[in-house]
Image (cartoon, rainbow, N blue to C red):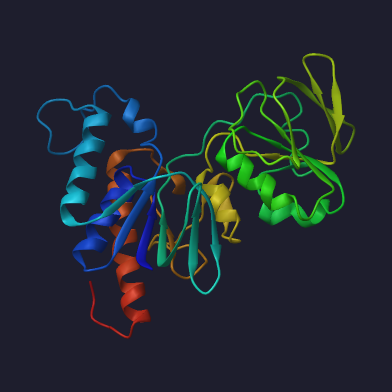
Length: 292
């Protein structure tokens, strides 16, 4: 059991971990990569650096600092969040439980450019299997994606729907896809239907009929994870209050995933605030009332 799990190892997530671990909480950070910041060649507007620093170097220093303080950093892909007796974080390789979770996964990925994707949003297009599987019970559906997140969504759908097809849109699928899930790796040409989605047309001229298409490209974005728990979102951003708290007790969000300025300074502040509030939440839960 972990006191705090932080999803994302960028500035918001790592900053939050510095606060929680120094407060004596068992802290785990889970992340597969370091996001867009790792691609920045020179950063000149962040406090305390006389000369420019690369995004990759800034991230590596933060991670080293967290490790030195005792933060457990796990390289893995988070594919879902749930709630059983406590908050549960599911990765591609394991399941972890925590008293509090902080989502700090950065801004959402760009949606794939497919004709009809926007047209059928909410009319056959879904971004959350846990949320919408019920509406497709007994029907044929597809999942758009090629990797662990797409497989996790497909497995969520299997017990409810009639059939699941994983469409990789030209990308190579992962190896561990069960036989019950059909895989099509042909690139998509367009989506089919009138008022509702009825199928997918491929560039080789073939078509399949589906009542729903669940988009799970790349890794799970912040709003994808939040929606699985019924957390309030605004578009692709997670809705939080002034304490970085979501509408679910014990769940916080920080950084680019909350919207506003996409800047390191904002991410660091929100990470510090989320970490501090998670400390208060856990201490109160354990009957400890003194402030952070």
